[in-house]
Image (cartoon, rainbow, N blue to C red):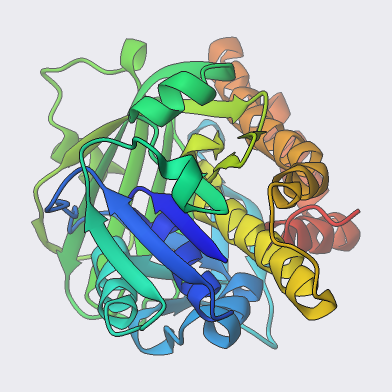
Length: 358
């Protein structure tokens, strides 16, 4: 079987590595020779997905930073803790720099005899050359031709990302603050560095305000030495109406995109990789042909879960956004009360770790 993956982001590289591990020939096609990797961007990976990554893709233990606790706070409650997630028996979540993960995946793939990276500006005759085409690139012509029907929600917000350099501390607790301007996350990546993701609604942000001053205002833990260059990206959610067209399958951010407040975007993609790899492996084991039926089976197993999960993240965002508009604390206090319930707390942790299981 020959598979073609369009795109060179983390979703593409991770999927490629999972497939070559099954001895499947993979050509990774990029329209750009050099991809610029943002040094300030990080991703969160759940403990369940870290275990899958280490055992079935590539061991990343040396480049992740593990978190023991996640604290959720609300500015409406004077920064009182709404929710606390922790597990005395294991780590909950890990943070990793995009650049480090990209580097280790690409370096390993380029040594693999089943893998080839190709720079190509047009995608003519791909259907003749490959059993399966997997497209992760939102902007290429294949997306515009085959995957134009999508559900998009614009948040009218920008995510501001940077890294704090600070005095050394024991840094294993992530903090999410629902501020009146938008969700702000402090995500440790070492004992002296912490990643920042601040999602600010355009209507709540005056350009003359200094973003670094805002970060300092909400910081109660770190003695900051330096705030690195701040990068921005537009926030929106996306779900494709159809996951495939013939033998072309959409994947990664092209398939679904969510608000970053819960750190679940890449975790959704990893769960998709787990499922499509399982489908392909089963067909190989049974001696069945590897054809476009893989796409239909993948959509049947993932579409409903991804749609529900995506909308659940959107509901969390809108819940706190609505409270800010009401200018009261009732909703935050309701969440605070729920968080004290052991069953609710454990259920929420399990969904964040493993996704929806049904």
